[in-house]
Length: 139
Image 1 (cartoon, rainbow, N blue to C red):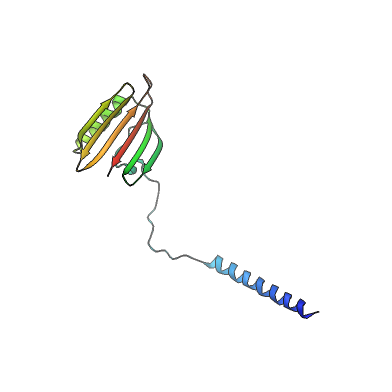
Image 2: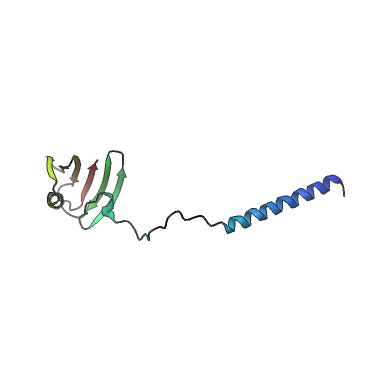
């Protein structure tokens, strides 16, 4: 056996030992728990906007930006009923109507309270019962 062969065998042995040591340390690793996590069962859908959602909805999208939050839903109710629902909810909480716009298929009502704005936009096509609802909360 040559000197080169002995060096290769020793280097291989060292590499195998280092690999084994690394693997054992990896298996034994237990990260520190910085703080106890609360049990998470799922987020409530209202948490994104702090507003209740109408019944029979399907969430299409949600977005959070520096300016606020937007949630878009498809609701199995007429647009007029949805606008009435949010008018009752927001008025009871002290929100005032800032502006209103209405076209054939789209209604938008903007509410204001303490410098914050909530915009409720509903869109539906004719006699369709499914309505697209957009809730935008501005900081």
